[in-house]
Length: 460
Image (tube, rainbow, N blue to C red; front, side, top):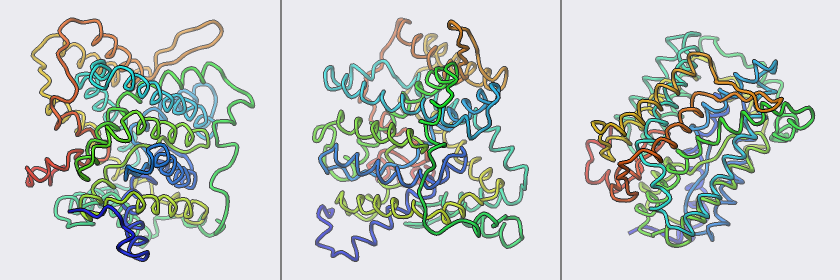
């Protein structure tokens, strides 16, 4: 019953639908640079470019939008903290993190090749929910401290942001329910501005038109005077996070297939969609933008509008590119109060951990089995313990000092233990609700399940 050729609606309606897709991804996409210190303009530019690249590699068939991934926020924070130990400020540390994300993007090509050769079930057996679930839980928990620190600047503004998100997500209708995060940011931002709690000096000074990124903020800046130990550390710290995001990607493509009624895993193929996502992430990271990921918010828009034409999504990508050349717009985003960011982060980081729990539950991971309990327990205690203890685990490789974040240590230990311990019984695809529900922005990855469980779906 969907519309597969939006040209029948006319150009004005196609443009309006494109704007809707852009606003659906907008709140979460610009929030990632606001939380990490990356460039808002570069983020919008490479969200648009990444989406267009993805469409080219998938033969213009898959109606997916690629926006900023929340999964890598912990990686950025870990590298910035280790950069501080090496005497670097945030601006100088972030390019090192971008190199790590670039390598994480290349992991998509490796998985795509393995899936093409061996098939998805054999490959995903090494990344079961008992590994990815606790990693996702740990991502949210290790970020929780930064959310509280931001909230302490003004608790009532932070709580207002939380209240708006909750009300819009639970009781909102149609478009309101799709963009609760954006509404939480805008609503608390406006109230803070009315009480004189926002500094707009940067907005006044910003130009209307300018380049989306500066060369010194890109990954290339590292090679002027590289700290090779930090380069290796960033790569080892961030690459394991890609394991969770690749599972998320597979769930996204399955959700889009379910929504549109077209099996995109077969045509153009899961290997192509993985390569599109990986290339978009790698390219964005080189120019100082966050990692990209396929967005569940836009899948929600597809489900509501029943317009499944990828052309509409490409219009949204072009609009994002156009907005990226407006520094004044980026300055408005940069002026968001820390308390607003903290309040929104409380919800988002909590959702990340909750999604990890849901991933364990929906895949029916049996934690009464000793091997499962040991794998999950070590992942959680290592990720959280290292993060809030020493901050990282360091060792020497020649003259270079390598420091691994808690997330990196936990992911490596979890994958190795799962591979060597007896009793592996996970087979990808047998529990579709579990496999296809991983999502870092809090919405379900299985639209068909929404229809079967309307009351429960409101929670998600």
